[in-house]
Amino acid sequence: MAFSRGGPKLRRPRQPLAEPALFDYAVAMLARRMRTERELRRLMQTRAEPGPTGLAAMDAVIRRLVELNYLSDTRFAADYTRLRKEGQKLGRRRVQQDLAAKGVAAGLVNTAIATAYGGIDEAALARDYCARKRMKPPADEKETARTMGRLIRAGFSASAVFKVLRQWGIPVEEFEVEEA
Image (cartoon, rainbow, N blue to C red; front, side, top):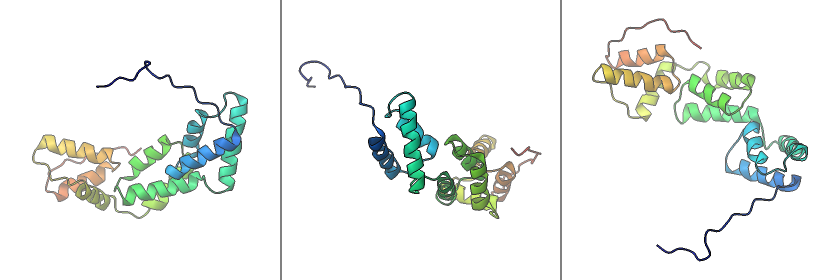
């Protein structure tokens, strides 16, 4: 193993970015993947000038991105919900929690969830999730509990999980569950 001469190289601290450079940085971050306003602010905060000057620059960049239609939490919520439902076959509750964690406003989350999951048979979506993950019917109680936990973590309601298990021929005792 070769060592470099002169010891470890020290990394110089990055220079804070002014508003035009901060805008370019934000556009580059949005080009990599879609982001919420909160995520973009968090990323820009590490590169902007500290203090009120940096906050003003970040606000101006966010305003400009919204005006240019590059940044929209409404569009993000709708696209994210659609992709998680159609691509990963996740349940309503999981997508709702993920959007809330990403900083999307509760009203936008509820609208996106209602649009994407309105009229969807949750048990059929849970079966699609099981097929996508190549889940096999559980053989004993321990595997049944593991399967139930996995489906609940994927965002499906207890009633949908019980329907899937019953279709697999697993005897389950259904009980009253409070929906959050």
